[in-house]
Image (cartoon, rainbow, N blue to C red; front, side):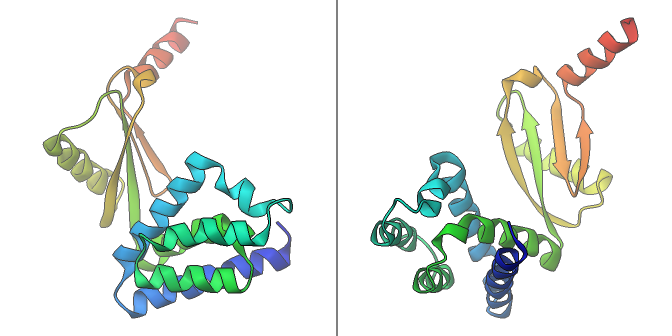
Length: 178
């Protein structure tokens, strides 16, 4: 991404974050942004919105679908994106918004990877461990199930990792045997 494009992404993301903070809608906008990023990650929509082969009218239809289930602030933001024909930058802008929310609100996603789904009580205990060990005051727990870790858990938050997985322990044991 060139400097001009990066500056555009930063300006759009900064504007959305500022509006959300000013109107006490941080949580609502964060949820909308997370949902949209999830759609992009699972669908390949970014390729469609970036493609020169897809007519602008089609891109508008795709983005308008998001407006049906988003907050007023997100709807207004998406409308500005459409008016300025910046659909191709939408994923980059949304990713930047997520980063800015982390810095502005000091709220981190605590990503917990386990081999099986956690109960509510386990989630609470793991979140308390993360808050204590990783110095996180505010955050939300994001659970990921990955059977390849065999057992235990991996906690990622604030650029720090606690790896108490069986896979990691087996790997360490294997290294000691060499």
